[in-house]
Image (cartoon, rainbow, N blue to C red; front, side):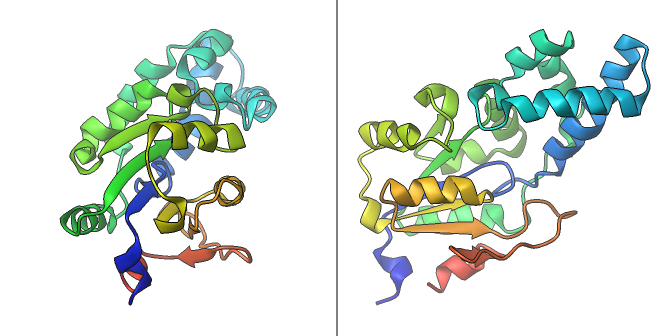
Length: 217
């Protein structure tokens, strides 16, 4: 029997996994520094240097994706800026076909993301993908980022999924390691998080270029 037929639950990351991560990369690396430079009266390069240092300090914490936190930190209305460039929100080309297929095959599909709730809602509204998920969980709902084992412990309390019959797809290896520690049978790395990024191959996890590869497991 194909492994795919045994799978009951599919856990999916959002940014870089079902959505092209270029929107986020452009926003934090280019757009926010541009606006910050204008506000502070400094050069773009200096704004990038200051902001990238701030970002690094919060990496791996809830603050990392908290738009309200970054609004306070930068003096910019981060969520408003997010909406100003929401035309860049774009699914990976194979994402919707995959979501339709797994739903039609009776799989339970959950979105698990570190994104702030406001941003998650903006992206799901923009793509229309909310209809494909049985439920959605953000790190802010759970109280921990996905990098922490506590996230997965609390997720298991909220969703009655069987780890042995579940897969989890993400574009970040650190998160996949944590999911594996929590008992998820098959963590899978999405090799290309953005159409502008270079494909990566994991030494530790099954790596896919396309969701179609999951059908053939």
